[in-house]
Picture 1 (cartoon, rainbow, N blue to C red):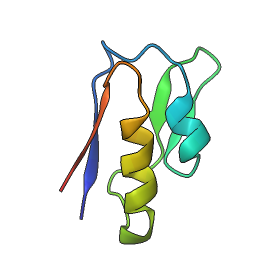
Picture 2: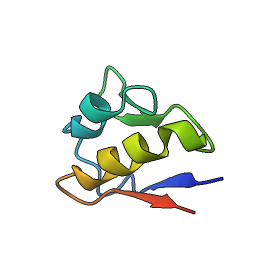
Picture 3: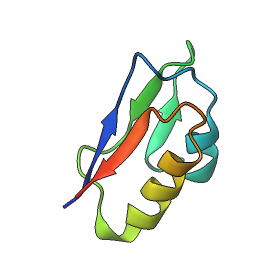
Picture 4: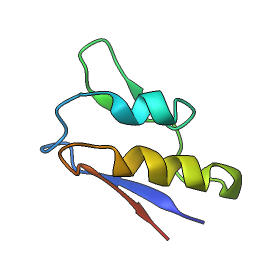
Amino acid sequence: MSRIELDRDRCEGHGLCEEIAPEIYRLDDDAELELLVDEVPPELLAKAEAGARVCPVAALRVLS
């Protein structure tokens, strides 16, 4: 199963990933990104990858 790697130092809290995949990514009240899954289920893999791609600072990677 795939997992998501988040570089917290790079994340600027734009929230584009959350717009694409709210089942996976969520910004808290302080604009800190939370990953809602430890491992990405196959049915959400495409959304997880799309959310990672739209990150303007490349803070997310989906690893197989």
